[in-house]
Image 1 (cartoon, one colour):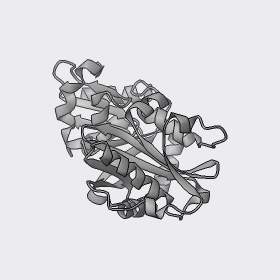
Image 2 (tube, helix red, strand yellow; image 1 turned 90 degrees about the vertical axis):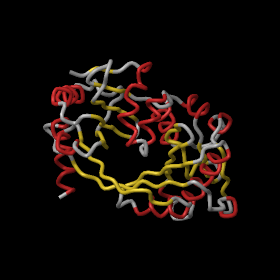
Image 3 (spheres, one colour; image 1 turned 90 degrees about the horizontal axis):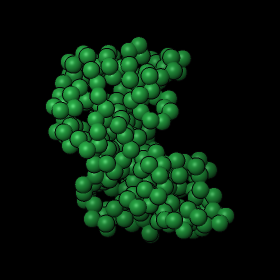
Image 4 (spheres, one colour; image 1 turned 45 degrees about the horizontal axis):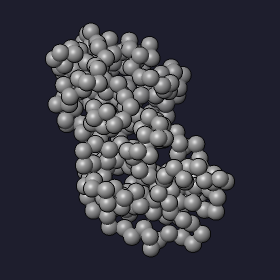
Length: 281
């Protein structure tokens, strides 16, 4: 059996997800600071649990609970495990025993493996202000910026706010981010994915026409500077093992690799999943 847990009872599953807190979004969902859903085998005494978040799916607790695993499988394909439309789901789990039982959860889609890195930063070591190129301005994301006449803000920015925080208003109230602006266009941006306790995670994106100019490092470092100034002491960064641009940016900005880990993913569409498996091979 499977039950969606009431938000008032999220603390009941926090011990199950403690080992996954390096994926800070899992903790942020339990805090109520991030959109998501939590499913358990027993609302009164959960031993197996699943968290759906904007940054991924997390499995924790007893992996041998076959009734839960099959019920979760049904919920995934029925679209009941998440609110919005999604094309793919990305899974991280603890303990390791989930590896054997994940195929039951994803059946009939065989899990596809992805090697990833987790970085952390506890101290800013990059002087972003000294490296802003001529013709660019770095700006904190606030309401006046979002409403500035004539400023072209990519949909990716506003979608990020809504996806990870629930709305742009929630992002402005609880989150933070910085953009690099060239004339009347946002060229690069770094936003907080989530905040939990004294930690946060951030991400970056730069429009293709503005890449290879150091803007990603500058905006990331500006976001990091702001995070430390507001009392956060640990900043996380997640990326794929083969994303060399993200890796270089993280290390240049002062992040240090904390761990390697494996993520598994699947596409809900069978043809897309088969095509991806072909690429994997």
